[in-house]
Length: 231
View 1 (tube, rainbow, N blue to C red):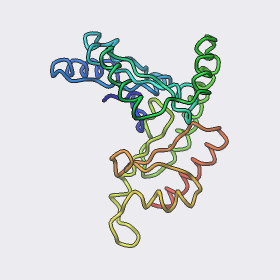
View 2: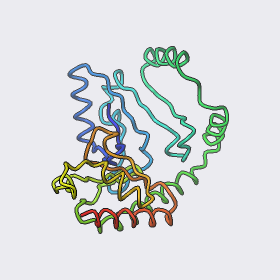
View 3: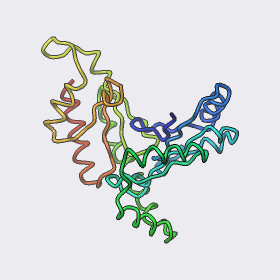
View 4: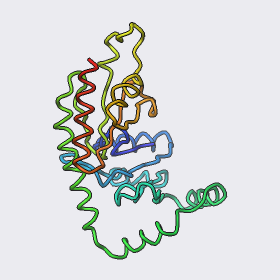
């Protein structure tokens, strides 16, 4: 399973990496699930590439997963698509129709209208906003003392590496746990975060910057102040 731009880290896989993955999958007869839900938000100089553009020979063993929920800011509507070999898609349909309900009718009609209108103004405006938020957020987070600047190559989340705190003894002499930061200073700061433990990383912290700039500045300044005071 390949997710680029990646959630939660924001890493964008380059052409050589994608070509290498496709070559390995072809040699080992592995399937590729290519998740490009954040493809519209690759930040320069990084560029999003489809894995099949690097390795068309992997087409018969690749599934493309995408979501309009991200590119059109329809997060709660959960509408997207999967593309792949016909026999596999038929199997997916047979399974899904017996296990889950379909996307709501409003979301379907709204999406069809958008696709027929051939108007990308909203998408471009959203991408500009996310880009501006990223630039502003990185400037604020650069003031963190024990946390290296997040790469944020794509997507709309900052992923912070809190391992620098783990190397320091906790104030009460007990072993430090990253949730201590999430549950204490950040909670007190009134900022909602997602602990890296949700992604199998005990030293990470995800912050979304897909919000209005005023709230972003207020929230990230609180994060920066509270994390620096934690030191």
